Amino acid sequence: MSSAAAKKKRPKYLSLPAILYQIRLPLPGRVSILHRISGALLVMPFAAWLLYMLDASLASEAGFESIKGYLDLPLVKLGLLAFIWAYCHHLCAGIRYLTLDLNRGIELRPARASAAAVLVVSLALTAYFGWKLW
Amino acid sequence: MVKRLVVGAHYGLRDWLAQRITALIMALYSIVIGVVLITGVPVSYAVWKDFFAQGWVRIATLIFAASLAWHAWVGARDILMDYIKHDGLRLALEVVTVLLLATYLGWAIEILWR
Image (cartoon, rainbow over all chains, first blue to last red):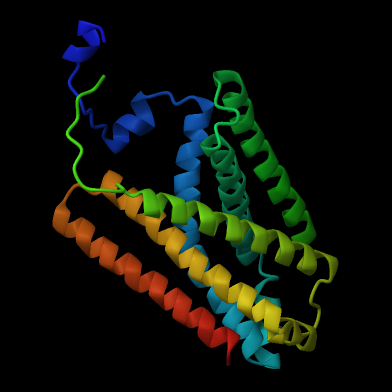
């Protein structure tokens, strides 16, 4: 190991503002941080929201009809679209990480290509389910 | 070579593996349920209720919910360990996360076996 590398202060901690504004992440880095953000959003609020809707829709006929009407509200559909994106992105990025864990596609070029594919496929799936929804 | 004193065992290997196995279970469930729901959109309460009354859907959904709780715990803990430096605050948020995930699991069971 070179002495220059040895002199660097390690470990290096980065603040959140530094990550957001100073460091220009490569595409796999962006996919990674979106994987975290989507995962956090799926835990809270989306899981709670979906459980609430599942609960009400299965409880009674009236509950089912009220959830049906609730899902027709534009703001609710927008929220559901956000959920669909978070789910699709988390799933697609997750599949990418599983293949990376198997040492497949770990070279720079395929890794960047698969990161781009994750973004494109998850947005395409969101568009498809959004179209189905409307 | 980095000289490092290694003491103890499995630094998070079990969590790492559990997160991946639960991910596969949830991916499989998502695809199966997604296809079933897309091909036959539940238009009425009776169809919707009957769907979740099926034995395999109940068991599969229960396994999904349990996988989700475990998977989300590992993920949420990773996020908290990375961004929350204050020990007391991190511990408090971890407790809140566990309670939240346990609530989700209990709620799911309540919905499925009403």
